[in-house]
Amino acid sequence: MARVKRGVTSHAKHKKTLDAAKGFYGRRKNTIRAAKAAVDKSMQYAYRDRKNKKRTIRALWIQRLNAAVREMGLTYSRFIDGLTKAGITVDRKVLSELAIHEPAAFKAIVEKAKSALPATA
Image (tube, rainbow, N blue to C red; front, side, top):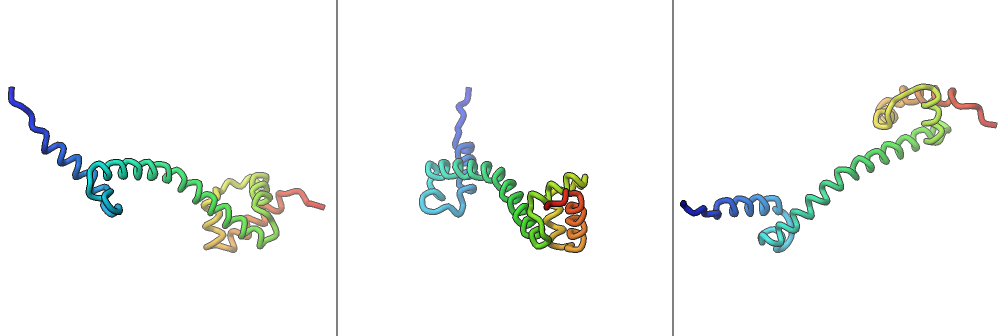
């Protein structure tokens, strides 16, 4: 039986790792051992941060909404409570976009939410 030479496969694997390490600093970009460790770690960070990005973006929408409704005399939590009681099911992303690009429409939604809340003494 003929022997199998593995150079082609190894070189291809190494090239793939080194291509992924492009732009890294020092030996991490051109030494296969250091590059493999760095690329593996970078993939872990990328996976984790794809999840964290969703949290961060949602927090941004909430901050924008809070700022927008405070100008109209409400807090964010009272606004969301009013929306729930009014039966309005619009998500925070859309509400945030409305607050920025369509202030008149957003104001109408805030008024509906306000009217659904009980009057505070």
